[in-house]
Image 1 (tube, one colour):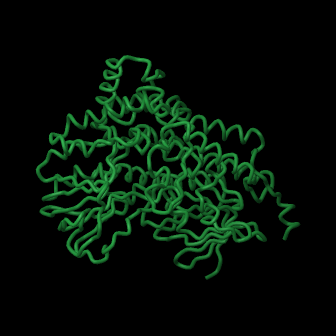
Image 2: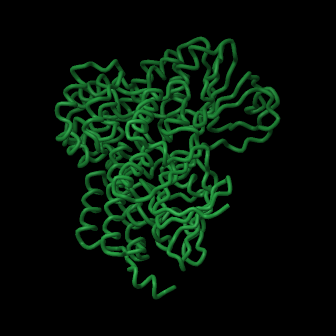
Length: 540
């Protein structure tokens, strides 16, 4: 099979890959996109579990690059469900004729930088070989589903499912007794829906989670139009917020007001719904004492909702600050435990011992199930990259370089891996933000950079080790000014056995990060080194 050549290879056809392709095509770069799935949408293509829904408001979780797209698309709900978000992704792919440059059902298996040619040599699972000047990883932050290595799993005779890789034609659990393992975001969204269908649901919980009500409702024409009429200004505001979403921010300390005023504020935020609850005061992520006031309010809401006091206490999180793990939003999650067909098993101290041919065993107690649903999360931010054999200069392996945790400059590039960009990679705001806002910022930065290089006959771009070291230090320093490291979260890699414990995203905020990137460019791409076409020719 002969080697194919192009300017840019993009790995992944989620929201990042689609926008990259649209931008690069318009700028005149020959581009190939490789996507493991059979369609576009990324995380929204794979995560089809019952109840899957975005935790960012629909009017804010969408592209801003096309005014026509903004005006023509209508969302049915305040917080969109997975089918509607996937429909949006498909609409974008069709509207901008993107599919013709996307190879579906195609997995990139290796990417090696050829120093002599100054190109990336890439190979797919089908054996196709591609040579590209630039390699852009648009592989997503939470795209590698993680199933714990339970003893006896292969012996189980019932059906198993993972929320992150759900059957596309759905699953009918009518009349079945099922287990759900995990109470993170996907479990919290799926359990209420599963309980309405299955004969009985047993939830196995290792760590209780904070969750906020979405207070979801149908989208009103008035609310949608209020955004459509003001999108340019609102989008600009989004880009300079902390999370990439417009929220009702209160620039006041939780400790500077009375207990009565705090309770009134939290009650108001709870009634509105969504993650804006954590913006009730300006020190909830910085002060453990302030954070505890919000955490206790949520615990009391759970206690008031769940009728069985013992079950309620098992559901309240007490060992870590609210928000230190990714905050969940739900539609009737805690109310579900009032149903007669739902049981909660605490496995925090007595974990699942093994899977049997008919169910599982916890502390010598056997449970039988028709099906097991694993809501056990993802190998976040690094897992998908590690599934590809990525080698940079002198055969340097990305997995080896990141052995003690991911190292990048600006979450964008990695020293020793020239011309390889990561969209919303480790060290960027990524998973702490409205992903589409962060995606657009990174895509614009990368594509503008490729134009910068083309205009100046620059063929290689790479961060310096010093810049990378300084940024890793900055990312960790920012994290440890907050309560985030106080939780064993997937932000820290704590859900994957053996994974280094390092805070992976940049917590300084979307707006702050944007300014850092803009200053980097204004300072002549400070922290990066370039090689010109003449230098490359001399080296060959």
